[in-house]
Image (cartoon, rainbow, N blue to C red):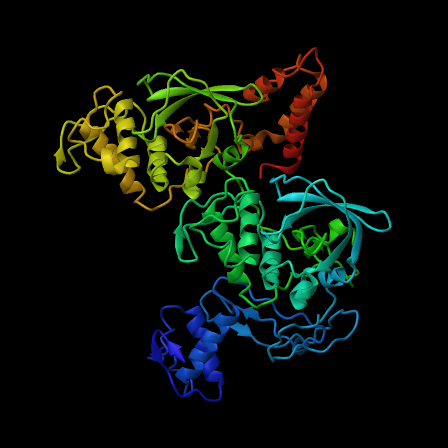
Length: 637
């Protein structure tokens, strides 16, 4: 055995002392896991270091760190379900290693089945009733017709309509599983074939257009464990490349991860961004997080075991193929959505996902439009900000917001209408730099985001400051000082020096001591390469920097507005008044715009009133009605 680079020899028959020493090594990390010195073995009889290292390494090979072991399902009661006994708060806790049968527990199973063997098995027959497995045998082998929608890119890549030979119609979310095969939307494909994902793994000739069928195991895990809107954690290292800017996972991120898995060697290069042309902006940090998580949970060559339950809430992927030359699709519907009834001996609770409480900043990012109808930059005001920008969206709503510029050497015209400007959260630009090509070092937006949330015009800088020498004379911070600091960060190669007049045209008097104070504070709080996290709060006074890209060549703009300045109504801010708010909103929406109860947020009233004509509910108002009612029923999460 190899332990921390040292070879340990002499493995032999395993004793109870070896197992006990391994357990202490596992639970007393850093104290009992030095197998070379055999620490924590005084009360044991002749423990064997090679044996201990063997047991330890086998355990982590089978169950990687952070994973949860699933005990093999059986009805013979011959598996060990560990029970922890705690004599008192100070005594040594004990783990009982008795089988279920030794507890004299009678399993209520429909039929007796053989106990699982300890020999490794590539595939194993189910040892007890499995709803997911039973469902896989019920899938129709053919469908009369398949119709694919144009990509929606919402909670899935697209939707599909399947019509059975009996005339039953299903509408399901789907994903694509071969980037290099085409399939047309809004076309009737007759005689579509369907297979269980397990059948395709075990017999790849069923769907030869899937290049890496074994990857369906990782895809099955992703469909059951990761959803659009979940938060990816970074930075991540994917295929040897370190990626920053992980944020909320989009359908584009999941679809990109699927193609990276099944089109291995073609779509899994994070440096080239291949296979993303048909997707909305892809966040490579998110893709790497999804990809790495899937292969950590389900190593290559292992078949994923879908958690069994009798509520039909798990996804047992179905592969549909409209033709050998066409893109194969994977249906991500739950067993219950297929109208399949689980024939379980007794009801079992479905697995639940940990609730994800979103902050105001998270829900705000999800609400952003992709494209603005117009953006107009005013001449620099140099008051409480560098300048202001007027943004208009497709609904006719306008916002006047404070902004700073992100590239001193790129031009932008003031008082000029830029049509179809694109906007991204600062996190999206970090994760996918191509969307804002004139942001030269996107990772440094972290420091800019911190500055927007921690400094405002009128704050007092303290000195002396040290920045390529000592700087004295710190004073009250101006908008020119903040703008100059942003350029010093984002144009580091040309604007970093504060000793000259470089990068100060268009600014009023700049105080180098103030600039150094802001710069040093930002990099002290958020070291270079680190990710800044906007405070997780329901307050509307946080700034979530939004990058406006008027066009590819122009100066990119960073909006430094608080959520309140966006007129954003944060759902979690009103959870304590939820019951009263529900009653007020319902009565007002039914009665029309003549009633305006004060319990409804003013911004909400203003948005809806603007779209009500002659006391008739417009489509926009009905949509608000539906959204608000849905939120009020679900709760603030």
